[in-house]
Length: 348
Image 1 (cartoon, rainbow, N blue to C red):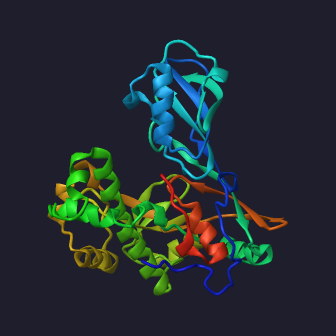
Image 2: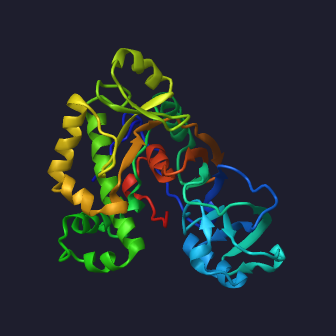
């Protein structure tokens, strides 16, 4: 589906990203740093043109550790230069300088009591070069985003190279394994989780696009599930007049459905809106239960604060910003360039 822009009233800068991996830099912002002692070796690694899974596999082989024992907070873009922590249950400290491979190197080693787990990151810091883009227009769009908020859509790369992951996820939930790719995904736990997540993401994007079309992007409605942006706590809006200023101040946000059988339900008209969206998708409550652990469901904030720094280049500009884990830099860059359809793929 075509996603709307928060800054649709402003012209885009144009330009292109990822002319080279060095034009797209990502540095993971950890939820905590290793304490310096413990049974788990933590390695801070930089990679270029490699997926996180490839990096984990090669480091595991170098350290004689089963790949399933490797820990990391999240996957990072392949066509980029990225920095992130990984953990390994290794008793002896290796020489970090000796740990390097094609497209990757280790920058630092430390230790911690625990394995690094998925989601254990505060966010990511991005530096994106937009070649051929107009820095002035980008700066105007960045100012509008700071005032209006960032629409927390899932990026196009969530849905796979051909955009078919969501269809496969729906097939898995409804038991229709005649869908191309469904049988393979049913046999592979990683693919199953990926495809069901893509289906959930597609419905969240529809929910958020509808709210934007109806002028409800920055409003609290009675019955909405709201998320506290500082702590992640959720509650149901009972008094829109009281919660409205908190939304405006980026203290809380309406939280859209990541549909699942354990998801916190909205109330009243907000619930009816979400039930209609699920019904129109062709998936029902029984199908969500069939999804098991991959379809428990949760809530995702629809509106976030973002501050984008623009630095002119001779042939475009740098855009620098930080996002919480799970938010997509390509969606921010799309607001600047107005070129969402041309955004690149990622392994994230």
